[in-house]
Length: 143
View 1 (cartoon, rainbow, N blue to C red):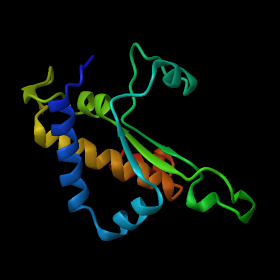
View 2 (view 1 turned 90 degrees about the vertical axis):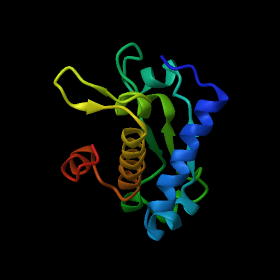
View 3 (view 1 turned 120 degrees about the horizontal axis):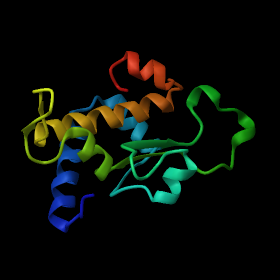
């Protein structure tokens, strides 16, 4: 479990800004409609609502709202969609702040791994905006 100091939040958020700067303009236009929200972590209660066990599972990101492929005129007045990313889940998926060697001998962790995981998570959630399923995203390398 990570304790998020102001310094660590600033470091993470600075990396998010760098990742966003490198994304195509089309993604920036989407994020004007579907804001990106960065949070430390979802609550345990929310993870349980999603059918996840907070003891063993975490969440890197979440697309809230109706995918563009499923929208209809009758949905006007609904809350706008958002894309949330979670610092704790992303940092855990990346392997932490410090580079190290995993049990299988592969390199994990470090700023480059965190950058890569942030990018994958944002693009994964953008994929949901366009109606891609988890299987579709897995095939594209954003699973």
